[in-house]
Image (cartoon, rainbow, N blue to C red; front, side):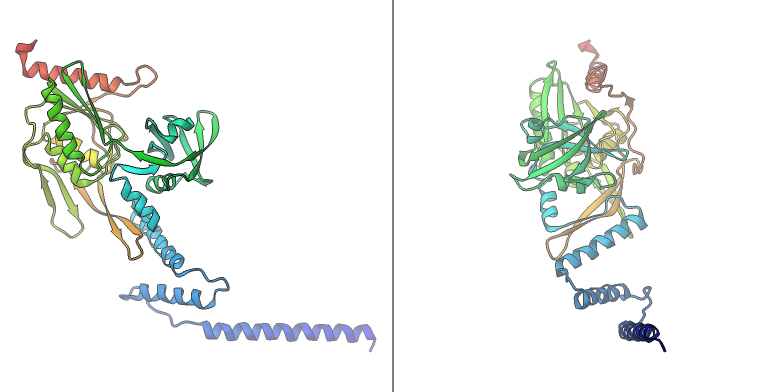
Length: 399
């Protein structure tokens, strides 16, 4: 036998032995790792499977992730399945820092850049830029579309997550990629402490009280009541309640705001799964005789829609503007053991007339488009005009 033949045969034998050893090792490992299968439809089986996966990762992974990262990753995965299987667009997981950041929004004071956001189709658009804020100083403007936050695409990102990413500790930076018409612009903005006004008010023309309600933060019902009383004392014959681009807030504050104008009876009906409906009624001591016009648009959502729907259904106010967002569901924040939290849709609400506005919105009694090209605030002027007509018709001697 030639030497080259001997070398070839030896090499092939080595390869065969190595392959056999590898195959045997893999087979032994497979037999050792083969788990006992379970029926995931059995009670508690899902938790057993999660625990098993957790233990296996912690035992065998070369680079072991921390326990917190694994646990939160599992929760994020469950929320993702929940969103997909139940079509709940509002389900969300907040890490501990994100949850603290979210809670700040209900206090009216937080660290961020100072913009109001709303989803339009698949885009996240800046509705307004608050005065004396980092966003205004940097040059952000209404109708700017946020495309990325710190390099991450916004498309498909829940609004709450986008807000949490833009907010952050005072003195830190956030980088935004903005679409402005045909331009693509980059902004790096240093976050600062923002004092968010819950409302603004003024006396228009000496006879119309104007209240711009920006959010349903804690105590806003009390504040609206105080402003309506103050404006009435100054000569206001009626109130324009402007809730355009108000994305909502605390459910209880919606009841309190509606109660400023509705003396008694149903404000909203709250329906939880497998529970009898809960009817929330007005608190009393309302300004019953004060005429009301409510301004709404497609950015009016959630708690704002509760108020608008109650005033409309109870015949207490005229709703002016465009059809509202259509968020007729209620989310509950559930804190987890590590300070993180889940936001889950737990209930739906109905207007006093029994209508669900989820996905439909509230249609205005008088439709007025906001054409910013011809009149930057046509809706407000039309609302004031309608209110003066109501005042005149109820007091003909004043004409």
